[in-house]
Amino acid sequence: MEQMSCTPEQTAIVGDQLFTDILGGRNAGVFTLLVEPIRLAGNPGRYLRYGAEWPFRMWSKRRTKPL
Image (cartoon, rainbow, N blue to C red):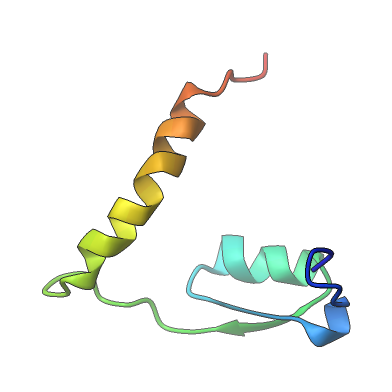
């Protein structure tokens, strides 16, 4: 929001994960909209999604875990 010079009142989060997308949005004080997850079975877009997430997954695995 800061990068876009937006306030929480001007922002909305659309997500399919209750405990990450919606709870995170509520904690940030923004409007949230819970949608049904996209079914990945038979959906060729799933490969694009996981391909886009791959660098972040690798980065998070390499991070040092707190004690």
